[in-house]
Image 1: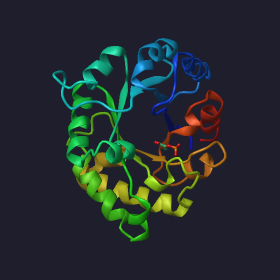
Image 2 (image 1 turned 90 degrees about the vertical axis):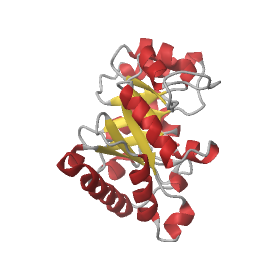
Image 3 (image 1 turned 180 degrees about the vertical axis):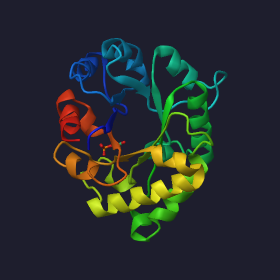
Image 4 (image 1 turned 90 degrees about the horizontal axis):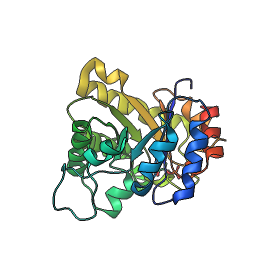
Length: 239
Ligand code: PEP
């Protein structure tokens, strides 16, 4: 899909020499490519990206500063030159027990720092099997989204598709993205039509065209296949 936004989430991967991948991505000349390396590489990534790729954080704290050992604020990300932050990734919701209220507070912090924010939602396999995917995603949207659309991007990532090589059918992707669009319009009115909704979960160069070709899919959030410029740009080329 022309104009797709492709976002890489490196998770807890990458050492200093990995920024060469970002340099290669930046050299592609392709617009709308964002990469979220680990916090430790953001400084160097911003330099090699040279404005051609937006660099972001994978998380932020809800507060601007204070006694929160080991945490990084949205203001700190912005100070490094980051352009966006991912909040509410399912791995953080599961591993760090982040609630919708936590995610919303982080989204507000990201907006206050002037960052674009990617708010992640998605159901588990058990929830999909129980027929509650829309109810789960609807509740996550209601509880996690900020009141303002400033810089807002939504990512739908079924938990069972992340890192598994499995993906929903194109029909299921279209159906739940249509549901999310409806929720955004109900919440934000006509402006909800313009919010970009990414699909995430085992996107690869081979399946990108099909998944990104579905209605209301405005791009992809990519984990494993974002770790090398070759596979990340392969997705971008197919999008
Ligand atoms: C993710 O974690 O956001 C993700 C989509 O991972 P993967 O592409 O590896 O499934």
